[in-house]
Length: 393
Image 1 (cartoon, helix red, strand yellow):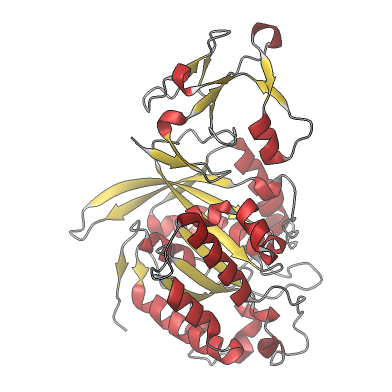
Image 2: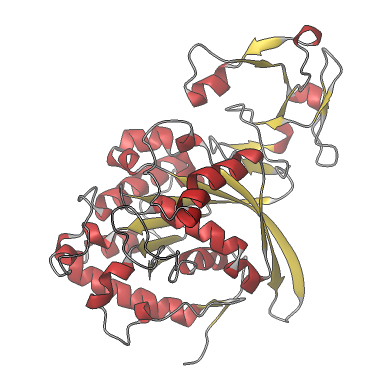
């Protein structure tokens, strides 16, 4: 019996438990009812009145039909919903493997910008290198990415608004079907198709462990975690930068966020303290374009990403070692010690989503990202979705 993880509430369920919602638009032909689980998820008060729900015994879910017959009006429906939160499920549920990528970090770390640029690169340059395609799974994703991410950043050259600590967009994931060509060790090619789920959580929600446990359950059910760390919020870095670099307010410290995530995952998954968490973690220093004066000319962070159809493992290791040295210099060893004790797989990265520091909330040039794909490709490799090689230097 197959399982799936809801991309909204992130509860793991059996596919046989999937519910359906009637799609009959004529209210007089089928009953409407208050949907409390759906309303609780979206904080609707009073509860929203919606179409009738068809339970699992009636729906007789199968991966072939993915449909149900409403017992009241006899209308056939393919609108699948989660048995926990009653949100609509992607049509690929139960068919494709789900890979949920959690992007977390302090406020002003650049999470929304990173998602915007990464998704655009996946559909363009990275997709071409991997012989891959990226397709939105619903109209909600298409509209949200276009209006909240692509148009402001790529067309108007404006900085994105910070993700709100509450509201609809905070609870709405970006859902994609990611198909790419995969090669085995013998060079044989095959097509791999997975579901990618991206969540952009407000940094304010990471300041309290109780809030994290309630609102960011997706973290413990993630296939990979990207910790976005803002070096411009580190005092030792701020002191060394030229005066013309705009600096954000100092928010939650990286060690605090990582510690809360560790506690959340261990409690939710009941992982003993003696065992390391197996979820791969990419610790990503953002905005490194503002730090160029701190890096020597031969720095790995000054070089372009070499990854093409496969991950260059050697490059990732060299970047990670260099970033770790800077980490020790900037904040000391504690963050790395926490990672070593609690996570089985982790690596450090440095990226620039925009390519240059913005001025006055605007970009003077078009987006020119730097090493934006490295953490994502590393997570794909750790999930055995793409091949990794050690290229000779």
